[in-house]
Length: 450
View: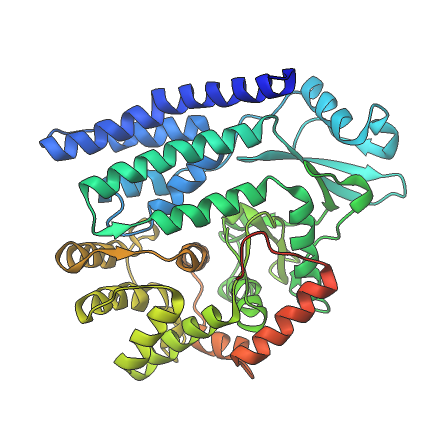
């Protein structure tokens, strides 16, 4: 074993130990406690995962949104996790930058702020100025993240195996494969640079959605340098903005996600509130993170649009065909009805041709809980259902966007916005646009689309 291999093995072993001692042990106690009727504390699991940070926490947040994967109290606790991690110190940053750009890396910037402006689950962002005076954001990956990802995925696979044995109504095996593929992609900042270029093309000439420029000469596989975009966090903007401003931002956020999907089969899989900011007092949004981008086969896009139209028309045959086109298998009438409860919740704001809030009443934190309980009960009776890979990030995006609209307290006609995004839609047009877009940017898939 080489020194480099030994270091990677050591980092992975340390991560196994940390996860096993905290999250793994607590998860096992959660499952055994439920089986034997003993009480356990979901907040302890949330605190453990919040302390570990990294991809395991991101995966846990996603799983918390799927009915029947976790009990309600655990889902509620995990959904509140935030992805802020302790930052690397200045000396460590200097060594990491030297690894990526060489020992004279400082000479490649007019200014580089050693204190990060933002620290997240896989890396941290530093503000800098290039030699030609352009302000940039340098995202520097934490060390040993490949080992961290593999260790976390191994523990997550084990936990999902326990879940399948104790409660087989939902099988997340394929969902795990999808999560694993996308998390591994997020480690490759060259791929993220290509993703950002995709969005630059899709939103060229758009006034209310800004995409940062990629600085290839200052980027590597573990360092991504993008143009700096000034903006205000949504959570600070919403409390001082009037309804018209909040609605304008909601419309920009909506189009930033659904227009690429409807026209190109591309979706941003992580609509976390920290991944965009507001500029111009509500004139539009800055999209800041491109690590989790999913390109779908055009046929899957067509199936989702067919589901939307089938729900609008009350066409059960079209709805059933749409689920199959989305990737669900071995369906029966009762399972289709259970899935439709959840689909009407996820797509509900799009179905009604009226100005409305995402949820007309109830707190932000309780959004979707009643629907989840109903789906859970139906799946226990009529399951099992195997979640297809193509479901994962569509589901995550729909829920994440709804959370943003709830925070904004926006009231818009989401149906008309979606119909605008669907203008001239056909599977064939999506296929042609997607082919041209990927060729223009030089984007190549890893394992999707097929």
